[in-house]
Amino acid sequence: MDSAAALAFVQIEKEAAERKITCRLVNLSAEAKGIFSVIHPDSLTLRYFKPEYAHEGLISQIGQASLSIGRDFVNFITFFGDLLFALVYTLMHPSTLRGKDVLFYVQRAGVDGLPIVAMIGALMGLIMAFMSYLQFKQFGANIYVPTLVSFAMIKELGPIMTAILVAGRSGSAFAAEIGTMKVNEEVDALETMGFDPVRFLAVPKVLATIIVVPILTVYADLSGILGGMIIGVTTLDLTFKTYITQSIKTIQVFDVVTSLIKAAVFAGLISAIGCQRGFQVRAGAQDVGKFTTSAVVAAIFLIVVADSIFAVMLYYVKLYGIFA
Image (spheres, one colour):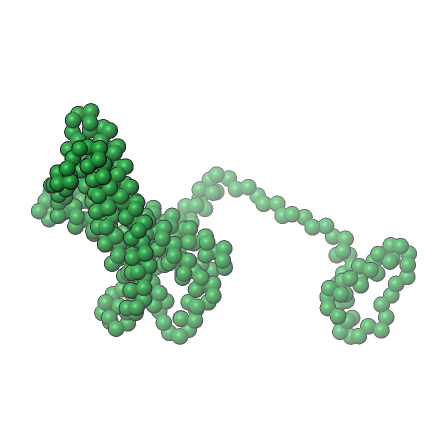
């Protein structure tokens, strides 16, 4: 007999007593008596109330949100320090790097992302060329459409658009993969066997992302320029040679180099935040979804913040000719 059967007998005995029917349990074993001893007949009449949750005020919500942001910032800085230490250790001991994993994530984050990057880049260039044409034609300045498209794609749109796409594809995948390993206690197993989870799981992902995002950025830049060329040749009556010549005049080595540096920094932020959010998973499948979403949102936010810092910093670098 288990507690469910004992509770059923108590319920029957209670209903029989209400109908004035004599009902008794006899010849019970010591084990059965022990089960019945923990069941109180009065508990069958208790009513269950929903707990009342107090509504928090606006100030309290703002305070809790601020504390949450502060904790997230501290956690990210702590993880970033661990990641830098792991990267330095890997560079000093190259034999500890799992090259096959790096190549695997290069394919997943880079090669598999080429079609979507090319399509979005071409559409961005096409739209930008068409919208600028509508404005420039009023002044007879159609020749400057290639200049605008090339400058915008290389300077801003190429790196930031590629970074956002990689954050959506790879950043979320990194968080979900590590989060699932946390739920399945695979990360704990790695620690038990003496492996450093950050060096074992995060370093290959970070290195692969830093390698592929600058390459994807160049690919997006070229796709955007070619997309703008479609409008230039079909609508602006520009020749292929004129469009390419005007674009090349606009492109400077400084802009290309800084674009690639920005792409590498964005890649580091995306992969770091994705891995960090994955390691934060605790409860289960619900936590995996929560932190995967958080990884994408946080990565996009950090991309925009980093791009703003780069915009101001590169302006003064160019103004004072530090690298001139």
